[in-house]
Image (cartoon, rainbow, N blue to C red; front, side, top):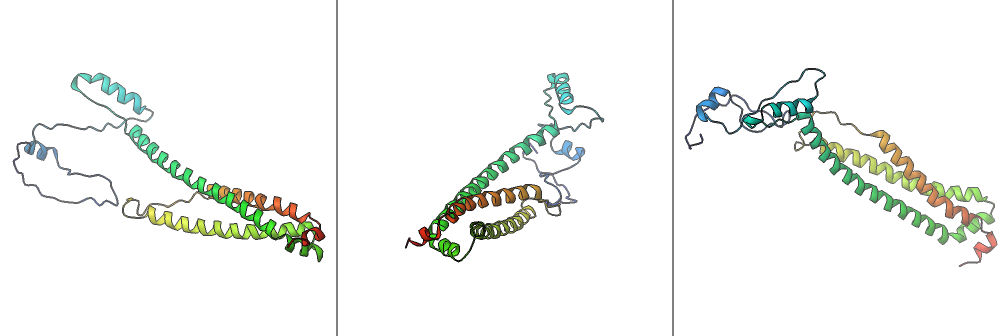
Length: 220
C-alpha cells in the first residue's frame, strides 16, 4: 500500500506477450480499495456510438468536467500519433536505402562507361568481323542487365527473408500475424533500376559502337 503495508493476492493468470502489449497488474476494484483506498489516478474508457466524432467527444467531456481535473484523450488520435512517429522512422530508413540505391546506380553507370572505353579494341574486332552497331550495343546492354538483375534478385530475396525474420521475432510481438510484402513498390523500384542501368550502359555503348573498326583497332 501507499504506507508500505503488505497485501496478499492470488495470481490467476499471466497474459502472454505474444497476444497483448499490456503491462502491469490487473485486479478488481475491491482489491484496489482494500490496498489503496485513495488512488492517484483512475482511467475510464468511453465507448462511442456509431457516427460520433472521437475528438469532439473528448473535448466535450474535458470541458464539462474541467473542475474535477479530468483529462480526456482520443485513443484513435493517440494511436495515430504513435503510428506517425513509427512511419517517420521508417521513411528515414527508406531514405537511406534510396540513397544507397542511387549511389549504386551511379556506380553502375561509371563501371559501364569504363568497360566500354577500355574494350574499344574488342568492339573494333567485333565490328571488323561483321557485328552491327546495334548488336554490339545490345551485347553490352545484356551484360549489364544480367549483373544488375542478379543483384536485384539477390537483394529482394534476402531483404524479404530478413524482413520476415524481424517481423515474426518475439521482440516485435507480431508472431502469427500476416506478413505482407509491397510487391507493387518493389516492382516499380526494380523496373526503375533496370531502366536507369540500361540507359547508363546503352549511351556509351552506342557511342563506342559508332567508332570505325580501323580507328578502334589503332589503340593498344
